[in-house]
Structure formats: structure tokens, C-alpha cells
Amino acid sequence: MTSSPLALRSNFDDLNLAEASLISCLTRLKAGETRWEHSFVIAGREMHVECLGNAYGFPHGPDNDMMLVLSNLFLERGKPRDNSVECSAYALLKMLGRTDSSQNYRIIHDSLTRLSGTMYKISGWLDHPGGTARRVTFRFIERVEEVAAEATSLNLKSFGAGTKLRVTLDKEVAASLSSPRVRPFDLDFMLKLPGSQSRMLFRLLDTLWYSDPQASSEGHLDFGLLELGKLLRLTNLRPDSIRRTISPIHDELIASEFLKSAVLSGRGATQRVRYVLNPQRPDYPLTAEQLELVGRLKLLEIPDSQARAYIRKHTVDAARARLALAERILASTSRIRKSRGAYAWDILNDGSGKYVDTAGGGGLVAAVSQMKGSTTHPVEEDPQAAFDELRRFEDALPAEEQWERHRGAIKLLLGKRVGQEHWKLLEARCLAGEMSASALLREANAAMAALSMHDFVETVVVRLKDEGVPLTSAES
Image (tube, rainbow, N blue to C red; front, side, top):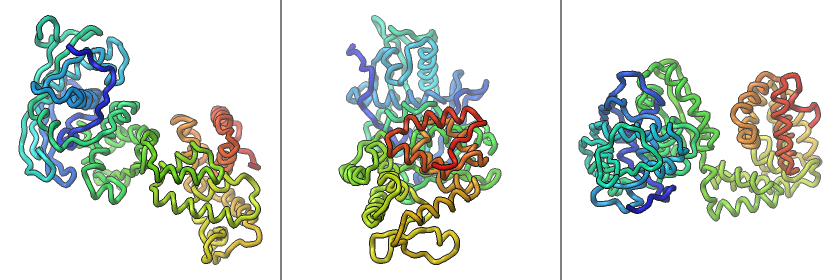
């Protein structure tokens, strides 16, 4: 038997399996939970799925990872004619990104047992794009065998490091994996997400973003809350229960920069969820066009890492337009009190209309008078004076408005650096008025421009732990 690789090179997903959403988001099941059934519309196509589990319950939690790893192992091995792949239990753990422990061997044992013992009945299965939908009945895994001198049926004892496995996929699954319905999928990114629930929702949203042209053109995905709960294969469909389940998942997907936002609206059973995906995740290579924009940002004295993060956060057209504005404003400004990089960064991230072009091209129109209800006018004599006035205006805004105005820029600069727990505390203290979001953003921009962000973040975290210490100085 050929030795198994410890890492997969293949990164694909089968749209039939992914759109049917066969794995429950639940991390554990109650006794007796062995089946579910759901009719729904996905990617413009009606589907009906019935799941009939076994004594181990229906597939859930880590079974999503197992389904994708086995699918890619099948593809990587050249789609064997007998639909079977062989590997050690240890190699399977490593492909799943799990450590070599007795608990994890038990997890993969139980996962294989569920995937081999669960029957799926699906209406809406497609053999190729644009084809006629049909009905199929299958188990994802037809057979699991332990390979010794001879293959024997899998017993119900725990696996170990030396266990050799032969896993045979169902013929319907193998045929679909050999069809044009297989698409590129970022399996590496998914397996790096912190929890099985966030990995499952990532797979669902990423699939719909790929499958539904309307979603990608509109820039968002919308779900009814109850419908989303069903697609996640939750068994408790009370609106408050669904919200409690998905809220921490949203935090993980936003922190990973897959989601830009997840907004719930409405009341009760009529609530809806809108997901906005980031234009580009941090693990994707930059295109030549994006690298050109990074180079132009660096000419404005913005550090390389900060420039790359900005370009990934915005579409190419939006970034190019904002960058051109910053270049014109800086070219027409004769005196800058702080660094060019900090000034450029403020222009790039302004969402309040503070900086706009003058009619003649170049130059700066300050938004101070706009905020006060007056007519805007070019600041030709001293643009820094207008900037200082705007700063005083922003510092006088209510805490909630300051946070709303600057949250995005602060998140970009500090969110990943301070961590999720400290970020929530930071947000709470901003909203409570215990700190000034405007002043914090200025200090963060100055630290980034001075290449002292590490020290600044450490200072912020220390102050966050001491509720009696203000987070920002009166004069930044």
C-alpha cells in the first residue's frame, strides 16, 4: 500500500454535496436525534433532502471536515475505479488538522461510522451544470474497512496510530466528484477556522457565493432566519435559539476576514440575516493590478503590511478611486502637521465625506461646514486648520456616533492585534464614553506611521485590563 501524504494538495468541493448542505452545524446531538427533512430553494433550484441517520446520530460537527477531506483524497488519488482510498488513521488526522490523541481517533471513528451509516434521499441532484435535476439515494461512504493482512469489516473499537483504513465512496458520490459540478474550494482556509460550526457556515456561504450569480453581483447573501436555521440543520428552530447559535459563528467568520458583516433585522420568525463578504481574504495572492496599488500606497508613506490589508479590504475600482483622491489632496497640501502616511490613511478610510475633490481637480474640500449645515468651500489657505477644526468637531460627537464613524478603521488597525475578547471590551468602553474613538484612531494611525504599532497595542491591552485608566490621552 502506498504511504499516505500528511497534507492534501487538492482543494475542491462538489456542488451537489455542498448545496444539499448534508452536515448539521450542531456540535452534539440529543439522544434519539437521528433524522431531518427539508425542502428549500438554493442557487435558484428547488431541492428536497431527507437524512436518515443511525445509532450515532446524523452527520454533524466534524463530519463536514471529513466529507471534504475524503472527497479531496479521492480526487488526489486519481479517482480510483473502485471508488476506494487507503490511508492510515494517523494520516487522516493530519489531513484534518487534528493532533495525534485518543480523543481525536475516537472522533474520526465516529465520523466515519455516521457517514457510512446515514442514508440521504435527495431531489434536485445535477449531473452537470444546466442539466435536468434527478433523485438520488446514497450513503456518502459505502464501506469502511480496516486493512490488515486482509481487509476486514470495521469493528467498533477505537482507532490507533497504526490503524490502516480503506474507505470506499458511494458510486453516486464518486460519479459526482468526476463531473463538471466540482469546483475549486479553499479547503486549507476552512480547516484553519477555529470551530466546526464556523467551518460549516463558511462552506455553505462560499458555495452560495459561487453558485448564485445574483448574490455575487449584489455583493451580499440574504436569508430568512428560520430558513438559515434549517440549512444549518439545527433541530431547535426557535428564533432566539438560532440567534444564540449563529452569533459566535459570525464573530469567528468576521475575525477571519471571510465576512465583512453579518446583520440581523426584523423581529421573531420574520427576522432576516444579511451577509456581506470581504472582497478578498488575507490568504489570497494579490493580483498584478492590486500590487500596483500597493506600490502607490507605499509612495504615500503607508507601511507595506497596512497597504496590503487596505487593498484586500476593497475592490480594485474602489481602492483606485480613493487612492487617486488621496494622491491629489496630498499633492495640493503644502503643510502637513503629522506624517504624510497618517494623513493619507485618514483620507483613504474616511467614510463621512470629510475629503472630496474640488471642481478644478486636486485640492481639498473640508466637511466641517457640511456637518454644520453650511455650504462646502475649498480650503486653499490652510487645509490643516480645517482638519484641526474637524478634529475638534469629531471629538465633541456623542460616543456612539464616534464609534459608528470610526469602527471600520479601528477594526482594521487593531481588531486582529488585540484579539476578540479585548476587541469586545474596547467596543464596550468606546460606546460607554470611557474613551474617545476619534482619539484612539488618531493614536493608532500615528503608531502605524511610526512603525510602533506593537508597543501601542500592548499599551491599549494593558489599559483595557485596568478599568480605572483612560485609554486615550486628552491630547493625541
